[in-house]
Image 1: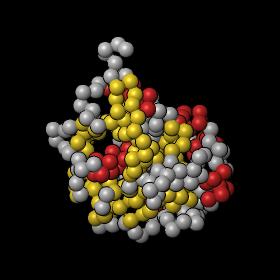
Image 2: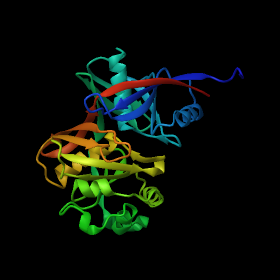
Image 3: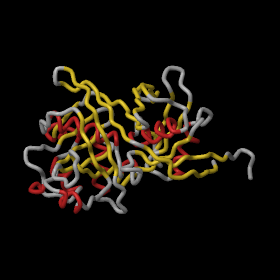
Image 4: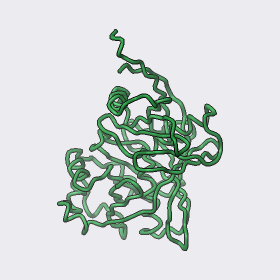
Length: 299
Protein backbone atom coordinates (compact mmCIF):
# COMPACT_ATOMS: atom_id res chain seq x y z
CA UNK A 1 0.00 0.00 0.00
CA UNK A 2 1.19 3.50 -0.78
CA UNK A 3 2.68 5.05 2.37
CA UNK A 4 0.56 8.18 1.89
CA UNK A 5 -2.63 6.21 2.61
CA UNK A 6 -4.13 6.51 6.07
CA UNK A 7 -6.50 4.26 7.99
CA UNK A 8 -9.19 6.24 9.78
CA UNK A 9 -11.23 4.79 12.65
CA UNK A 10 -14.90 5.74 12.53
CA UNK A 11 -17.43 5.26 15.33
CA UNK A 12 -20.98 4.61 14.10
CA UNK A 13 -23.27 6.20 16.67
CA UNK A 14 -27.05 6.42 16.34
CA UNK A 15 -28.42 9.77 17.46
CA UNK A 16 -31.92 10.22 18.90
CA UNK A 17 -32.43 6.54 19.73
CA UNK A 18 -35.82 5.50 21.12
CA UNK A 19 -35.28 3.31 24.20
CA UNK A 20 -31.84 2.32 22.94
CA UNK A 21 -33.08 1.31 19.48
CA UNK A 22 -33.60 2.97 16.11
CA UNK A 23 -32.23 6.47 15.79
CA UNK A 24 -30.17 7.93 12.98
CA UNK A 25 -26.62 6.64 12.39
CA UNK A 26 -23.78 9.12 12.06
CA UNK A 27 -20.08 8.64 11.65
CA UNK A 28 -18.02 10.14 14.48
CA UNK A 29 -14.29 10.64 13.86
CA UNK A 30 -12.27 11.69 16.91
CA UNK A 31 -8.92 13.52 16.95
CA UNK A 32 -9.62 14.96 13.49
CA UNK A 33 -7.30 17.97 13.83
CA UNK A 34 -4.91 16.83 11.11
CA UNK A 35 -7.43 16.19 8.34
CA UNK A 36 -7.92 18.59 5.44
CA UNK A 37 -11.40 19.43 4.14
CA UNK A 38 -10.72 17.21 1.13
CA UNK A 39 -9.76 14.30 3.41
CA UNK A 40 -12.85 14.77 5.58
CA UNK A 41 -14.99 14.80 2.44
CA UNK A 42 -13.35 11.57 1.27
CA UNK A 43 -13.89 9.89 4.66
CA UNK A 44 -17.55 10.92 4.79
CA UNK A 45 -18.08 9.63 1.27
CA UNK A 46 -16.55 6.26 2.13
CA UNK A 47 -18.49 5.99 5.41
CA UNK A 48 -21.62 6.58 3.31
CA UNK A 49 -23.95 7.70 6.09
CA UNK A 50 -26.11 10.81 5.82
CA UNK A 51 -23.60 12.75 7.95
CA UNK A 52 -20.20 12.24 9.53
CA UNK A 53 -18.93 14.50 12.34
CA UNK A 54 -15.23 15.25 12.73
CA UNK A 55 -14.25 16.19 16.29
CA UNK A 56 -11.13 18.26 16.86
CA UNK A 57 -9.76 20.70 19.41
CA UNK A 58 -10.94 24.31 19.57
CA UNK A 59 -9.19 27.46 20.71
CA UNK A 60 -12.49 29.12 21.67
CA UNK A 61 -15.11 26.42 22.44
CA UNK A 62 -15.27 23.03 24.11
CA UNK A 63 -14.60 21.22 20.84
CA UNK A 64 -14.70 21.87 17.11
CA UNK A 65 -17.10 19.87 14.92
CA UNK A 66 -17.03 19.68 11.13
CA UNK A 67 -19.94 17.99 9.35
CA UNK A 68 -19.97 16.31 5.95
CA UNK A 69 -22.65 14.47 4.00
CA UNK A 70 -21.45 12.00 1.34
CA UNK A 71 -21.29 14.85 -1.17
CA UNK A 72 -20.69 18.16 0.64
CA UNK A 73 -19.88 20.06 3.83
CA UNK A 74 -22.79 21.39 5.90
CA UNK A 75 -22.73 23.93 8.70
CA UNK A 76 -24.63 21.92 11.32
CA UNK A 77 -26.10 18.48 11.82
CA UNK A 78 -28.43 17.65 14.66
CA UNK A 79 -28.18 13.89 14.90
CA UNK A 80 -24.42 13.90 14.31
CA UNK A 81 -23.99 16.48 17.09
CA UNK A 82 -26.09 14.37 19.46
CA UNK A 83 -24.23 11.22 18.36
CA UNK A 84 -20.81 12.83 18.85
CA UNK A 85 -21.45 14.45 22.24
CA UNK A 86 -23.34 11.41 23.61
CA UNK A 87 -20.34 9.27 22.71
CA UNK A 88 -17.92 11.82 24.16
CA UNK A 89 -19.97 11.83 27.38
CA UNK A 90 -20.07 8.03 27.51
CA UNK A 91 -16.29 7.82 27.08
CA UNK A 92 -15.63 10.55 29.67
CA UNK A 93 -14.23 13.16 27.27
CA UNK A 94 -16.97 15.60 28.31
CA UNK A 95 -18.96 15.64 31.53
CA UNK A 96 -22.45 16.61 32.62
CA UNK A 97 -23.42 20.23 32.14
CA UNK A 98 -22.72 22.90 29.59
CA UNK A 99 -20.06 22.86 26.89
CA UNK A 100 -20.02 24.17 23.31
CA UNK A 101 -19.11 23.38 19.73
CA UNK A 102 -17.20 25.52 17.26
CA UNK A 103 -18.61 25.27 13.73
CA UNK A 104 -18.06 27.05 10.41
CA UNK A 105 -21.28 28.93 11.25
CA UNK A 106 -20.11 30.10 14.66
CA UNK A 107 -20.34 28.67 18.18
CA UNK A 108 -23.33 26.80 19.60
CA UNK A 109 -24.03 25.77 23.17
CA UNK A 110 -24.23 22.04 23.96
CA UNK A 111 -25.59 20.63 27.22
CA UNK A 112 -25.13 17.08 28.55
CA UNK A 113 -28.03 16.14 30.80
CA UNK A 114 -28.19 12.64 32.31
CA UNK A 115 -26.27 11.26 29.35
CA UNK A 116 -28.43 12.92 26.72
CA UNK A 117 -26.95 15.67 24.56
CA UNK A 118 -28.77 18.90 23.66
CA UNK A 119 -27.63 21.44 21.08
CA UNK A 120 -28.49 25.09 20.70
CA UNK A 121 -30.36 26.54 17.73
CA UNK A 122 -31.20 30.16 17.00
CA UNK A 123 -34.48 32.07 17.26
CA UNK A 124 -36.70 31.21 14.28
CA UNK A 125 -37.38 33.21 11.16
CA UNK A 126 -40.33 32.41 8.89
CA UNK A 127 -41.36 32.90 5.29
CA UNK A 128 -44.52 31.62 3.61
CA UNK A 129 -45.19 30.58 0.03
CA UNK A 130 -45.93 34.16 -1.06
CA UNK A 131 -42.29 35.00 -0.36
CA UNK A 132 -40.98 32.19 -2.57
CA UNK A 133 -42.19 33.51 -5.93
CA UNK A 134 -39.06 35.61 -6.30
CA UNK A 135 -37.09 32.34 -6.07
CA UNK A 136 -39.29 30.67 -8.69
CA UNK A 137 -41.08 28.30 -6.29
CA UNK A 138 -44.82 27.92 -5.60
CA UNK A 139 -46.64 26.00 -2.88
CA UNK A 140 -48.26 23.79 -5.52
CA UNK A 141 -44.83 22.78 -6.78
CA UNK A 142 -43.83 21.77 -3.24
CA UNK A 143 -46.98 19.65 -2.90
CA UNK A 144 -46.42 18.09 -6.33
CA UNK A 145 -42.88 17.14 -5.29
CA UNK A 146 -44.44 15.09 -2.48
CA UNK A 147 -47.40 13.85 -4.53
CA UNK A 148 -49.72 15.56 -2.05
CA UNK A 149 -52.99 17.32 -2.82
CA UNK A 150 -54.17 20.45 -0.98
CA UNK A 151 -57.01 18.39 0.54
CA UNK A 152 -54.43 16.29 2.40
CA UNK A 153 -53.01 19.27 4.30
CA UNK A 154 -53.97 19.99 7.90
CA UNK A 155 -56.34 22.91 8.30
CA UNK A 156 -55.03 26.25 9.54
CA UNK A 157 -51.41 25.09 9.34
CA UNK A 158 -49.84 26.90 6.37
CA UNK A 159 -46.85 25.53 4.49
CA UNK A 160 -43.95 27.60 5.86
CA UNK A 161 -40.19 27.89 5.53
CA UNK A 162 -38.58 28.00 8.98
CA UNK A 163 -34.94 28.73 9.76
CA UNK A 164 -33.22 28.27 13.15
CA UNK A 165 -29.75 28.08 11.60
CA UNK A 166 -30.73 25.98 8.58
CA UNK A 167 -33.84 26.25 6.40
CA UNK A 168 -36.58 23.63 6.10
CA UNK A 169 -40.02 23.80 4.52
CA UNK A 170 -42.51 22.61 7.15
CA UNK A 171 -45.65 20.88 5.82
CA UNK A 172 -48.55 19.74 8.02
CA UNK A 173 -50.66 16.83 6.73
CA UNK A 174 -54.01 15.66 8.03
CA UNK A 175 -53.19 12.15 9.29
CA UNK A 176 -50.55 9.48 9.84
CA UNK A 177 -52.07 7.64 6.88
CA UNK A 178 -51.29 10.58 4.62
CA UNK A 179 -47.81 10.88 6.14
CA UNK A 180 -47.11 7.17 5.59
CA UNK A 181 -48.36 7.22 2.00
CA UNK A 182 -46.11 10.04 0.73
CA UNK A 183 -44.19 9.10 -2.44
CA UNK A 184 -41.60 11.85 -2.92
CA UNK A 185 -40.22 12.99 -6.25
CA UNK A 186 -36.59 13.49 -5.29
CA UNK A 187 -35.60 15.38 -8.43
CA UNK A 188 -38.34 17.94 -7.82
CA UNK A 189 -37.45 18.23 -4.11
CA UNK A 190 -33.80 18.79 -5.04
CA UNK A 191 -34.70 21.56 -7.50
CA UNK A 192 -36.90 23.30 -4.92
CA UNK A 193 -34.23 22.89 -2.23
CA UNK A 194 -31.64 24.48 -4.52
CA UNK A 195 -33.89 27.46 -5.26
CA UNK A 196 -34.86 28.07 -1.60
CA UNK A 197 -31.47 26.98 -0.13
CA UNK A 198 -33.10 24.26 1.97
CA UNK A 199 -31.66 21.33 3.82
CA UNK A 200 -34.93 19.56 3.02
CA UNK A 201 -38.67 19.33 3.51
CA UNK A 202 -40.09 18.21 6.87
CA UNK A 203 -43.60 16.76 6.73
CA UNK A 204 -45.51 16.18 9.96
CA UNK A 205 -48.85 15.39 11.53
CA UNK A 206 -50.18 16.03 15.01
CA UNK A 207 -52.68 13.19 14.41
CA UNK A 208 -50.39 10.63 15.98
CA UNK A 209 -51.05 7.49 18.05
CA UNK A 210 -47.97 8.00 20.23
CA UNK A 211 -47.82 10.30 23.23
CA UNK A 212 -45.86 12.89 21.29
CA UNK A 213 -46.52 16.31 19.80
CA UNK A 214 -45.81 15.36 16.18
CA UNK A 215 -44.74 12.48 13.96
CA UNK A 216 -42.58 13.41 10.98
CA UNK A 217 -40.74 12.47 7.79
CA UNK A 218 -37.77 14.37 6.33
CA UNK A 219 -36.54 14.36 2.74
CA UNK A 220 -33.19 15.98 1.81
CA UNK A 221 -32.04 14.64 -1.59
CA UNK A 222 -30.05 17.83 -2.22
CA UNK A 223 -27.63 16.50 0.38
CA UNK A 224 -27.76 12.88 -0.85
CA UNK A 225 -30.29 12.00 1.87
CA UNK A 226 -33.48 10.62 0.34
CA UNK A 227 -35.12 10.13 3.74
CA UNK A 228 -33.67 10.54 7.22
CA UNK A 229 -34.75 8.83 10.43
CA UNK A 230 -33.95 11.70 12.83
CA UNK A 231 -33.22 15.35 12.06
CA UNK A 232 -32.53 17.54 15.07
CA UNK A 233 -31.97 20.61 12.91
CA UNK A 234 -35.51 20.17 11.49
CA UNK A 235 -37.20 19.29 14.79
CA UNK A 236 -36.15 22.68 16.18
CA UNK A 237 -37.92 24.63 13.40
CA UNK A 238 -40.97 22.36 13.77
CA UNK A 239 -41.21 23.03 17.52
CA UNK A 240 -41.03 26.77 16.80
CA UNK A 241 -43.77 26.37 14.18
CA UNK A 242 -45.96 24.47 16.65
CA UNK A 243 -45.50 27.24 19.22
CA UNK A 244 -45.76 30.32 16.98
CA UNK A 245 -48.10 29.18 14.18
CA UNK A 246 -50.18 26.34 15.64
CA UNK A 247 -50.26 28.16 19.02
CA UNK A 248 -49.38 25.16 21.17
CA UNK A 249 -48.75 26.95 24.45
CA UNK A 250 -45.82 24.95 25.80
CA UNK A 251 -42.04 25.09 25.84
CA UNK A 252 -41.17 21.38 25.62
CA UNK A 253 -41.97 19.30 22.54
CA UNK A 254 -41.45 15.60 21.81
CA UNK A 255 -41.14 14.72 18.14
CA UNK A 256 -40.91 11.26 16.57
CA UNK A 257 -39.39 10.48 13.19
CA UNK A 258 -38.36 7.44 11.17
CA UNK A 259 -41.48 5.33 11.72
CA UNK A 260 -42.69 5.52 8.14
CA UNK A 261 -39.46 5.13 6.20
CA UNK A 262 -38.19 1.84 4.78
CA UNK A 263 -36.74 0.24 6.77
CA UNK A 264 -38.31 1.89 9.80
CA UNK A 265 -35.96 3.38 12.40
CA UNK A 266 -38.03 5.10 15.12
CA UNK A 267 -36.37 8.12 16.72
CA UNK A 268 -37.27 10.55 19.50
CA UNK A 269 -36.19 14.21 19.50
CA UNK A 270 -36.82 16.52 22.47
CA UNK A 271 -36.96 20.28 21.92
CA UNK A 272 -36.91 22.85 24.71
CA UNK A 273 -37.76 26.42 23.72
CA UNK A 274 -36.14 29.33 25.54
CA UNK A 275 -38.79 32.04 25.91
CA UNK A 276 -38.68 35.69 26.90
CA UNK A 277 -42.02 37.51 27.13
CA UNK A 278 -43.55 34.59 25.18
CA UNK A 279 -41.06 35.07 22.32
CA UNK A 280 -38.64 32.31 21.30
CA UNK A 281 -35.08 33.52 21.85
CA UNK A 282 -33.32 30.20 21.16
CA UNK A 283 -33.89 26.49 21.65
CA UNK A 284 -32.17 23.28 22.64
CA UNK A 285 -32.85 20.07 20.68
CA UNK A 286 -31.56 16.79 21.99
CA UNK A 287 -31.78 13.12 22.77
CA UNK A 288 -29.74 10.02 23.44
CA UNK A 289 -27.04 8.42 21.32
CA UNK A 290 -25.79 4.85 21.24
CA UNK A 291 -22.61 3.36 19.79
CA UNK A 292 -23.64 0.71 17.24
CA UNK A 293 -20.46 -0.17 15.36
CA UNK A 294 -16.85 0.78 14.68
CA UNK A 295 -15.20 0.55 11.30
CA UNK A 296 -12.13 1.72 9.42
CA UNK A 297 -11.80 3.48 6.07
CA UNK A 298 -8.65 4.11 4.06
CA UNK A 299 -7.94 7.47 2.46
